[in-house]
Length: 109
Image (cartoon, rainbow, N blue to C red; front, side, top):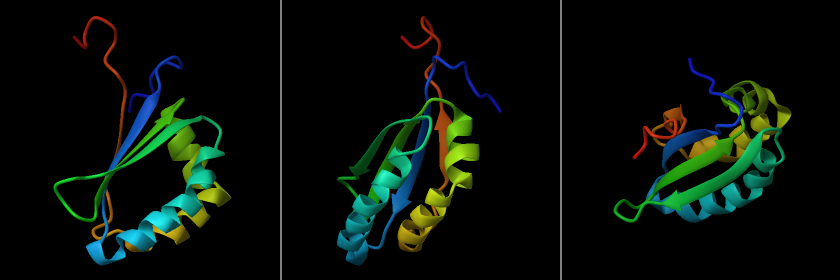
């Protein structure tokens, strides 16, 4: 698994599906959970985007310094347990999370 050089950030991507009847509760819980991830070493930025074409669908994008900051840092932290308790019960189905890096200069158009 590529971890990428330190100067290239790792971007976490997840498509979140929440029952439409629970979006208000989810968004409120997400606002409560957000500082838990923002306080983590290696965290850079976070965007939660509401999908226009499908009620209850969101795109979560998180910038990390390194893949390990997410997979070995945040996911093994006490804050992740709080994050999980606040948010995971909303997801139906549970999201697939992936990670990506920009293509090197000259290869991304």
